[in-house]
Length: 296
Image 1 (cartoon, one colour):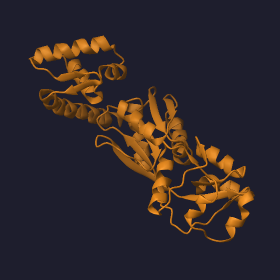
Image 2 (tube, rainbow, N blue to C red):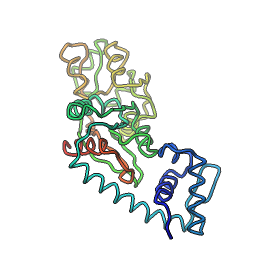
Image 3 (cartoon, helix red, strand yellow):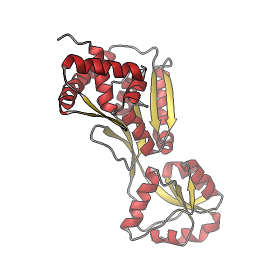
Image 4 (cartoon, rainbow, N blue to C red):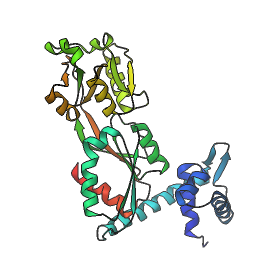
């Protein structure tokens, strides 16, 4: 049986994304052409590989058996590319990165600067995402990798590497000066306006869990899109907010804001690299991933 390898490659992406249109987008092909090739593969193998549904496709029993073999082969191809890339310079190429704002400011900018200095010909595509959005973008193949803040919820197919930890403190503006003279319970936020990131963010999830563990059900009075916005709102004396220590050093030094001591321990958070080991990366993306790995 002599089947074109391209058919197996197309089968891999259709199975991975469960959708002909998504697979076509990743492979920069047309959906009708992808469908035609899958039909040809099924004809050659004399079995049905996919069950068509309104939401996409699902693997049949025969399809699952084939996918296990094909995905293993794709992994070997990717590993071979990685080994070769160690001996190859990069002059061109591009990397698509999904990144949360805190991860960008606290960690990624420094590494982007270093990578760009070493490989100026590589185009960098940076997508500003919340942590859940960035992880979803990795799953769908829209980005090569993601750099995000905890908490991180992953499916088994994705990999996570902790890159750096950071600590957050509660800060407030001059209107709330009386709060800095003693340590307070986190329940203080029930009596004062709390400024936080929106509900579909890792930051909001992180603090809701802490509140729940302390028997509290506090909702933010003001929701912001970015940590920079929270800082500006706190400096404008509109409420209290948790922010990374690194981000508030300048404001604390200038006296624009102050630290509100909290009795409860706020766990450290971490910045993570997330990627799909089954998704073939370009040489540029692999080298950048390797740079982040070695720095962790």
